[in-house]
Image (tube, rainbow, N blue to C red; front, side):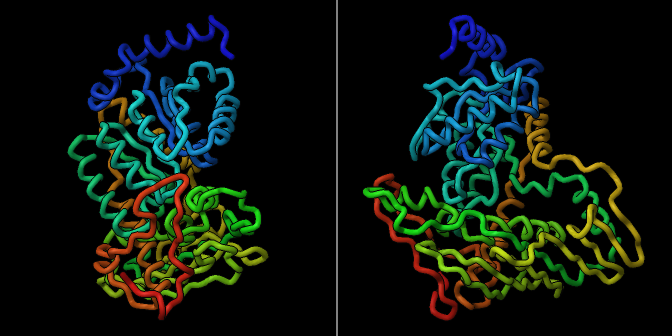
Length: 431
């Protein structure tokens, strides 16, 4: 419980630094003067959301967390406790989320967006991302949006429309494709795009890891818990919420492939995939292998796997006519061939850099919009999933225009919903 003098100091900071809480959004569209508070709201209080909030609070001397939203009060409590510990002596003026601004439930994001925040951090399971992003942008909020940006093609198209709205409103939209903000990788792709390995012939990316959130046995489901609540609790194991392992995790590798190809879309892809370990009620694969064909004949290969006791690797091998670039095998990226090059600078925290760039842009009235490429990279991973699920060759246009909607038609915390069954190549149809 706050002491009277503590409450007064906190209220004074908010009121004095902002000048007028309700006037914050229009001012921040044009830039925020030094010393003016930038009010931050976090949607999704899990580990990634807590990390994003901490980075947002470090990014600006006057950024203040004023609201949080989640489906679980326990997650909110754990998040705020962690953030207060991380902020240390600054916690009193950095983490200012009183009980009325702790919003719980499926519609909590709307309450948060309407609570007077200037910046919204979106870190829920990606199945919610298209709706959350549209609501935030329509309300004139700057946004940090975690990857991926959707779990199906209708969601991607919805986000592309939102990206246009953000551009029209001059709102900042920074995506959580963190490698684009890693200085050693930025320098590496600058070398590649400058011709250090000649013309790219092939790109091979691996994302071999342990399982992220294994599905618990159905017997552990509490009596009376609805389908929707059970699936959200175990969101990583359902494609409508996570997009599958290639879209939720290996999308980082897809993003680097897209980056190397200057974000030009491929013509088509074929893929394999499946599940070696029983799903226990979930419907996602634990391995994929995708072969992308680009307009100039270049091939890109993306393989991911999530299994215990296996070889793990997160690496990129980019082969050109004059050399090879290797990322992830050794401490720094390197190029061999006609050009010999190794990144020799000091790596900085790419997760922090995302927020540093976002808040610096807000301060000066600038605009960063990662929207187009975050949609391209998400769809790149998604079309690989479509090809693996169906066993068909899928074109970029097919993937973009797919009519398959993975989630329930409407969300009800107590609702029933049966997700699509485990896909079977040659049986599952492309929609």
